[in-house]
Length: 543
Ligand SMILES: Cc1cc2nc3c(=O)[nH]c(=O)nc-3n(C[C@H](O)[C@H](O)[C@H](O)COP(=O)(O)OP(=O)(O)OC[C@H]3O[C@@H](n4cnc5c(N)ncnc54)[C@H](O)[C@@H]3O)c2cc1C
Image (cartoon, rainbow, N blue to C red; front, side, top):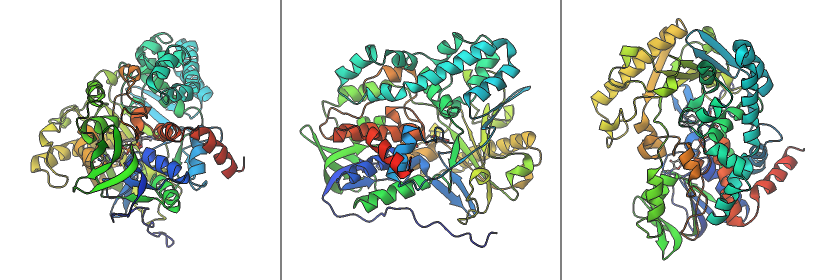
């Protein structure tokens, strides 16, 4: 295709063992682990990032088959603007090298039987769209979206209150950040009922709940508000060049600071001497010493798998095991021999709900997917449509991706089998779902099926293999009120010199996971790193 198309240079990181000594080991190289390593290495620490995958990036990873490329965990990013803390902090850590391309208008095309609503990336414009569709609920909708906007302004203080010791967090939640804590500990349904009567309006306002992993009858209102407002505060964007730019530029900063990213490096245990973390033991038995360990591998992984039965850990491990995980997800990745624009798909996402009230039972039967014909919710988009650099890195194939929600535990019987070495009936189950899903796409976008020249399905077992998340649940601990009542999801642990970062500290989402790195490094360096980097980010952007 384009003559100037060249392969991307390899991402930072190597599988070679690196020579110590190390001040800090970071377990996991998702955006939270890389941001933590970038901050600490910038403050003079020699950091070793250990990643079990063959590439750094966690859910900012992209993968390729032939000339097709797909993002695994980034589709649209909100609050990309010059007043957003995380954006300025990211610019500081990457020297302003990451660029974003707005999706444009609309951002999300929401579809229910007999109803189409297009969401723009702006609160007031969305109010107008919804007022036109649901005139009887105009005032309630407006007040509800204002409540979302107000709740978002409280996020930073709310999560900052989890950085100091537990008694301070408890006190802050009862007094200083009480309004936010109330929003975090009621369900979205409860909050919506205060503003909205019409069940269809509620369904539309919660149509994108797949972005946060839990529907409104379970989801914390704060998590829902953080997610929906993320995409309404300013026009959402896509990272130019694809989501691997996060690992590229954060990784370059880490290496420039003299620190190391090691891939294909699976940590088996965090080593604790007395009450102090002293390093890690790798899956092959190698022990690596460090003065400090930060785990971005998820709270459940860290407390139940990576720590041995330390008496100080047991009560927390037991409490964290009681917190439900978010839903298992599946993906269809496909390649086409024509552009998605042939079928009217542009830079926007589609949220296609098969029925109203899909949130009550959003699961698609794994055994007999063809019986109902389609998943309850289809989240569809195409990064080749939205990336201005599409085709410039050998990724010349037009792509599409669907995320959907299977019957939970539907692939449990294949647990323990190995990636690409699973049995024929596993492949057959995936193929049945793939065929039914492609047929469903063809009904919504006539002619699409005959142009799909490559497709593959991933399950929660695939997620488990590549991200090591328990049960392969990509969003970790469910963002429900119970989670926000817990005092355990915080950067500090009862083990000295052992810290946590990652989406479990706040909620799923790239900016939230990044924000957890600010919480963690502020605790370690005893300094407000968020404020410091925000200032640096403004300087980088010349503001
Ligand atoms: C399908 C999907 C779509 C999404 N879409 C969006 C979106 O459009 N916009 C948005 O903002 N967010 C989106 N998200 C959410 C976002 O990608 C995540 O919340 C965020 O990237 C999580 O970052 P993290 O650093 O906490 O964890 P992760 O990215 O999961 O990183 C953790 C890392 O730790 C490694 N690890 C685990 N255990 C070990 C071990 N023992 N040894 C070594 N390494 C280990 C894992 O391999 C992994 O690389 C999406 C997520 C998914 C799954």
